[in-house]
Length: 186
Image (tube, rainbow, N blue to C red; front, side, top):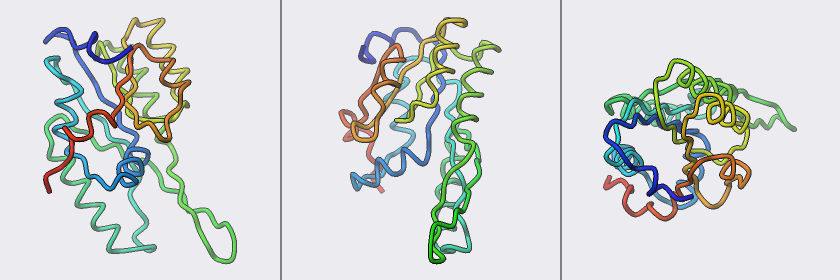
């Protein structure tokens, strides 16, 4: 089901949860930068925005100081957007071979699930829009839909998206179709 049927009322309370790493890599592959204010307005429509949560791990300053500070400036810009909450997760450095390392974000899925569950229990929202392609949220989504009667949407990019996640939700939003509306002018 597409988004249109769910943009009903100004009293409907909406939260947006963004898997920052997933979102960054999806937009970077397209060579586009997103204006998060435009994204929020496009997704919320005439409903009431409660909060946007952006889950991300700070970069490793030792790996690349320039990238680290650029990322910090980006996070500070996000924090200036009204109702926008940056939720910091852990960046784990894992040695793979010959002194090479990979970095993995840890705790983002758990924190996103906790936001969904606690918000449902405390009745802080009516609808949650999860921007991710990761199906790790399906159990939490099923709980808040069935037990707390919350509407859950999945906003996703076509590549790197889980059909299981989309199928677990009440509605879906293909971000590829609205990308031109939410691109940053910078």
